[in-house]
Length: 113
Length: 111
Image 1 (cartoon, one colour):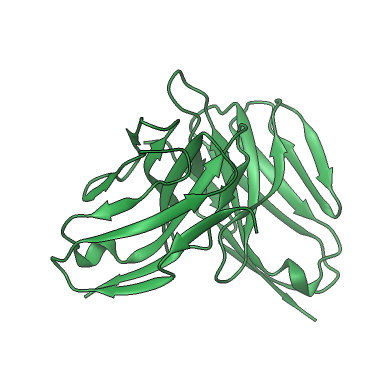
Image 2 (cartoon, rainbow over the protein chains, first blue to last red; image 1 turned 180 degrees about the vertical axis):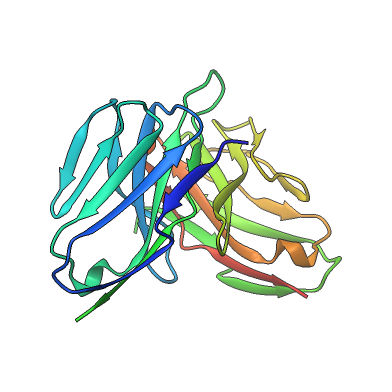
């Protein structure tokens, strides 16, 4: 089946540092999304990207939809302790019968004060 | 509070027993999904439903069944649990492309 390769698997950074993570696919997607999951909770949508080349920001978060439609990255600037969590990319390919998401394996972020 | 409610929060289940994980949403979303989350594997789709009365198989459907009798409820049933079904299960719903709302999950341990 379709696979999303997400890297890095984990990151341990100092508060105030910038963070970058990316996701690549063997398939083309119509939509790329980035979710964050905190302990004991389900994933929460951070950013949605709908067009190839699109660059979108949400506060300190910036994400881009790759031109080839097979990749995306997420940047977090000036990290803070509450950024801790697992970040998932997800790709969506619309078909005639469903628009289900395919998720990456996640990037675990730890921020030290 | 609007959103998705999953029950139970956690469960220990003997192998061979059956169990239904409950999922209810109050947002009137048409589409609903069940994912399992395992360490190192991210979230994998088990079953989905585009609208009440219809269901479809996801990436890992074996050993699971679902039903969608109405818009709000989307239960997931394990007919005869096996240890490999130990996981955290998330229900989600959506009404627009990619904008999924997730429940808080059910942590299931099959022993």
